[in-house]
Amino acid sequence: MVKEFTRSAADRRQPKPWEIRTPSMLLETVHYLLTIVLPDTRRPYHQRYEFIFDRTRAIRQEVVIQNLSVAQVLPILEPIVRFLCYSAYRLCDAPIAEFDPKICAQHLQECLKKVLRCYDQCPDASSNRFEMERLYLSFNIGSPEATQSVIARHGASVPELRLHLSTQLECHRGNYYAAMRHTLRFTPLEAAIASLQLPHFRRLILQQFSVAYQSRVQTVPLEWLERILHYEGRERTCLVDDCRHYNLQLLPVKETDSDGGGGGGWAVKFEKSQFDAQRCAVS
Image 1: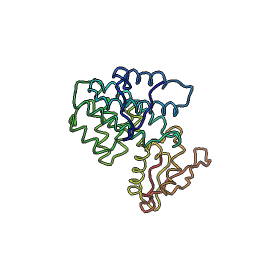
Image 2: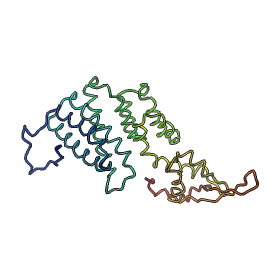
Image 3: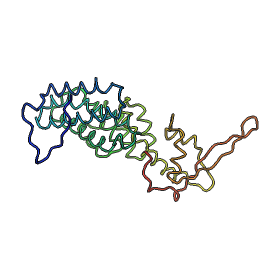
Image 4: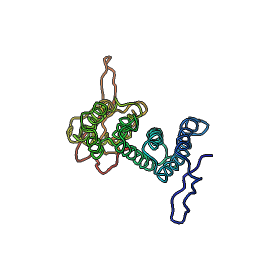
């Protein structure tokens, strides 16, 4: 049985010393949760996530209570960061009854910032610093605050962060297509957490196209948009619905093949005045 999280309250007694787990026991518990409980497929992933999320939250609470040293905190928090990144991606399409992405994102942000503060206090405490910095940038892709924070710590030309800082700068320039292309060169976990911003980037690009390709007669082929916006695999059928979501006009296109037969497809007619800028990104 793993100790569950209990919320602090004014009327709740402080835990006794013997009720607090030692740093080594906290680390062992994290290891148990992520190597024994997480891979156990007898339960659906969202139930495993809920259990581990609650227990790691209790672990983080005890870390704060004991005011552990940086050398003790980092081995505990780094695996939790990876778990939250993976879970945020794995469960991004789950119904809200099974997974709350906002709560997960809030705790992931807290863990990442805590880890980075630990590195600032003791730069040589862990060899995983740049991995965590990259996950921080990937999770906060397009955030000026994250970009400035990392540049203040490391400068703009450190090789280990060059690709991710370039991605951030492309976002700040409004070149979201280039930013999306850069994420293809991220490590799998970095690309997974960065991909959660794809719907937002697609919305921004479609809004830009509503200005750049505005025309009363010209249209843009849907297949080209699929490639540009990286609608791949099972997402290929989603672009039509997304265009309708943003009030973009879809027109049928008749094509003639080499045998003289008819073919068909769709094209998008962009008009700045028609794009519904009030609509949130499609998640």
